[in-house]
Length: 64
Image 1 (cartoon, rainbow, N blue to C red):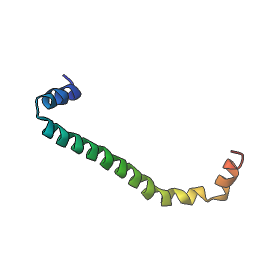
Image 2: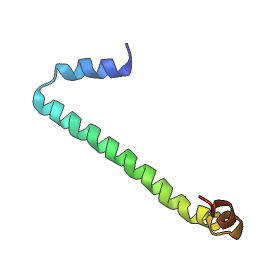
Image 3: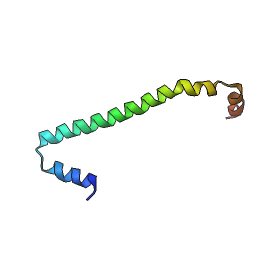
Image 4: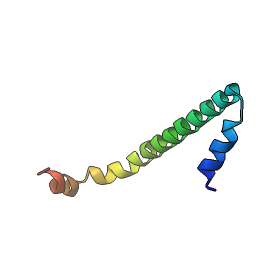
């Protein structure tokens, strides 16, 4: 049995209040992952900016 089915089976038997808490936690985890991905993008921007600002890059992308 895969993990998703195991989670569904376990949650089915819980009272609705606890299911609501689980839903809140799942939404928190999704939001946390999204924030972590955005932070990685922001942190790499300064490093990538060095290459983006080179005249050779401007020349390569000027027709797009």
